[in-house]
Image (tube, rainbow, N blue to C red; front, side, top):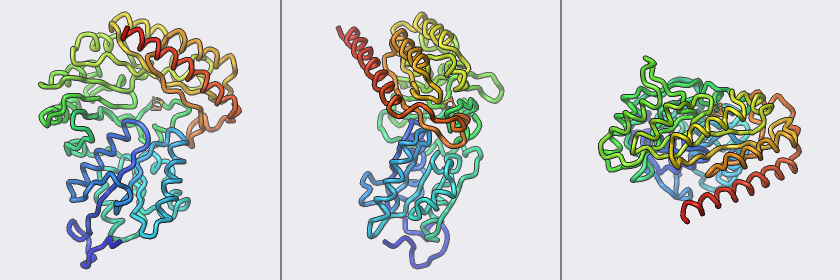
Length: 390
Ligand code: SF4
């Protein structure tokens, strides 16, 4: 495969633009970041392909929140690097930020490492990697340029993810996000509305607003919080459905529930991760609420948003989690009756506070608790679904 044209010079027209395959692993923020990258590279003349076998460039945009996601990337790189004419390989996103230079040492086939704050310059970095056929590392922590959200590129024809904020300030003790995505930064409300309007003008009728914690959204002048932002976006003519994720319980207030009740296009769905039902574990996780506070919030939500759906995340096997702690989580799931829940086994993430603690819950115990909670949630989800369709 030839990456460089004969002139060998630097500039927009000097490098052969090949086809690019992006593999996204992780959350919706990553999905949106991949769309942004696709939009930026398309504008520069690259072709996007769904077939990694035909790609000149393979980019992994990978979450670092769970060890499992990273393991999938290491093995994906291994497979690619054994190919005779291997493509240029890049790692983007949280994993890039988490491992930085170390990626080149662990996987010599990787040519480009680009952190989440740097994706606005992805075309430049890719061109550099193609031209030099040398390693490119871009992991500065800074604010992304606003324009990157306005390429109009969305994977789906009828749905758009729109980012409202980047980063997170919460420092939950198990979570790597504040270290890899940086401090919390909010996009201006008018830019979010502008993007929503453009998406709807292009025929999209369903939008999901994205942030690690949308409930903390606040414009720089402190005038527009998240309920007011929902109102503004809901006014976009032609929009039929407006959703949002994720809501941290400590920042989620009555006003949000009232907005969900009062704005017709807002979907009555709240994703509000509880993570644990044990107050001791919640304190160790630095979540800023107790199980009682969480339950009260759920009661308030259900009293305001009639028939509102509720989903959550849980981590089992957090360091020192006892059987009693797990039972408290089990009780919370049983009592609240979530429509759905994502349940994960704890794995230590580098840089985090929790990683300093011994990962002392045996794998077998984690597995058993995970299966038990999954089974409970499955039966609750099925019975709620059945009741709704009966
Ligand atoms: S709220 Fe906590 S779990 Fe969510 S991204 Fe921020 S630090 Fe991570």
